[in-house]
Length: 534
Image (cartoon, rainbow, N blue to C red; front, side):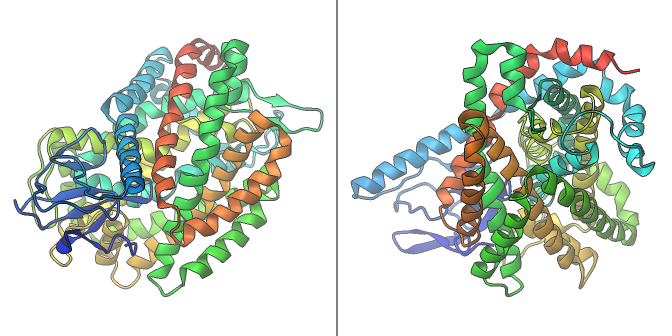
């Protein structure tokens, strides 16, 4: 829990309840308050807002897909005009974020996945075994890649998974269950199953429309398949995507991750400033070496961290094997039926279950955001075969890793725990589940997972950002961008510029719009590439 999140909201100096942080994308976006005048949980947007004495403290679902507003908005009373302007700006951003990550946006993301699933004749289901043989099976049999590119297919997918297998697989699943109930896991699966078709398209197009210059440097991604696939007249849309990605990388892929790591280590006595300096050095050593060094690092760390985390989860499940059936039963039942309040769990309507499940799935596997196509384009592989790597990336991220986290939470009943009269959410919920299921060592598993997941996410997101900048301004900006990226890591680790995190979250969501337009328009190209598979 951050220092800010420990603060109680106040009404003219009187505390109205201690805040429990709500995590979205690995960052705190709100506080759950369990003590209000109507006895219902209250979620307050932001970190340190103040409310009038007469502000009703009831709660209702809002346009924001992750939070709940006060009945009369923010109720922020201050006389300073500058502060008022900042309040209005924050209110506008919260509204925009609610639109970007709201139901219509999620419908668009899922709808695109369904459309591609139909166009591809359910490729992710009918060719799953073939996809396995052409991806992970090839690695086990040490079959070399022969197509042009900068890094191996395995390095490309582990680099992409370095960004997707992250805090969302731990804290994100905890948030989904805490706010959406056990049934949210089912809707995470749904988002992943259709997202496999989306990621297949992104990875295939990334390789299909990439460029390789005379010096062997590879460039590809959403920007390139928009410009080359849709035509030069759409270059403005490619530039919009590149700008959004370059800025989002500094928040979601940088400061949020550094802060998550520093908070996790702070709980074990490591000063945040020490973490800030350390992460600058460790990330800098890798990203200054470019995509080849990132790929070499990712292919070693990502499989190791995933295996260690999954083994820890498996031990908890074995020790609680008798509860696994009930956990699956709760997932399927509450996917379509309301979940009643119990212990620290406040209950959830089906609409919120669907909403949080789909949103968490999207945040976890990033299918539809398009960023992974930037690194998939670097692979020494053909479009269709790299597309299968993208497909399996989503499967491992959500169907495997997220499911294991969810089962650990459910079999240990951690989502019903009360700590100081409050329920748990986010990373705190996952940590409590592992600690309860594996006393003594469980919390350490989550700590190591958070640190490693955050670290590898930073590496790949730096590459996303620098390549996006280079598309607009040329290769001359790559080194300055890397240096700036390293500097922002310290800012994030010590908890600075928190407002930027929320803005970056919105930019991260806006990235999907140009990408989804391109995927729908280029669906015929994706189908033709799929049909080349023999």
